[in-house]
Length: 461
Image (cartoon, rainbow, N blue to C red; front, side, top):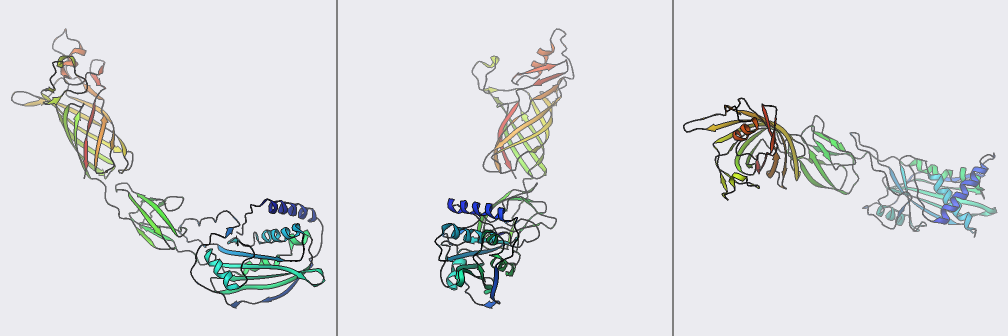
């Protein structure tokens, strides 16, 4: 769409005055006083060459809309550089402004695929070659030159030349004369022939799209305002402004994210995403409750996302944690209890694997084993428990990460104390010796150990 922008206050004021007067005159009838002059047909001419941007040129509209993204390549708009010379002998500033502004108004809406740039200075150079060179530097694909001068008998003469830099030919040239127009004629018909010349421009060829290829279902961000999703063939197409530098990110469940910068110099081309399978296994080394060593092995049925874990924690040799229990106030740093926990978990990650902070959720069960003099056996009194998992990994390296996880555990009491005078609270405290003891009982079968956690290091493979 032909569009315009003016910032000078006198120009805006004059245009407002013109529109008000034109509206008042619109109710009256009348015939045009414009008589068409000669029009030359299309003829070869002009100059070609590289397209360079000229910062001296000012767009009539603030910005050109970006082509929409989609599987069909859109047709880019034509960009025409406008030159205007008002060579009339009048000294009336209002008349000069109205001539220029009504030309811009008349050009508006002629074509939906035409974008007008106003040259700076507006008069432009004298030769057509220089005009073509200036248009190329402004990345325009043509130019329109309009000149108004005095004609005999108090008439006005208009001349226009439209040059197409794509076909290297003149799309239209013509001249017309008219009695000095009033505001109604300026608004309706004086510039009609010059504006209609834009219709002679052939549309540009559709822009070739940029093709992105990768694993089907991958979501790609950074190529346009909306994200792209690779179709069943593993491809997506989008038309982007050129030249430009684009930072893209590709995400797909089960694959490591891909980040890359693309220098996009001209339309078309292809981007290949080097996507690698995510982690299939991980190995944990940790301290349970910041005291007892533990090791776990995880398998990812959905790489990077869903995990199944099994592990063990030994209480045979531990260290005093952040708080020293009263019965260990002797100052020793080593604690030992003859049991171990075997656990299994299932869980999933919430954020991508390259996030610095990567939380995860899950749940699991734990079995308690005691070590006697000659064998190990499941604790008959408190044999098992269950726990939710709320954890978080943190590191800049997605394959080597530190983690902390909270695992408040529900322990089940299968048997009661053989001592009838021992309370359930004392009985559970004896059986769960070595824990922090920050918990409470639910009825006479369950004990919840609230302060249960792990700190450790995790290696992803």
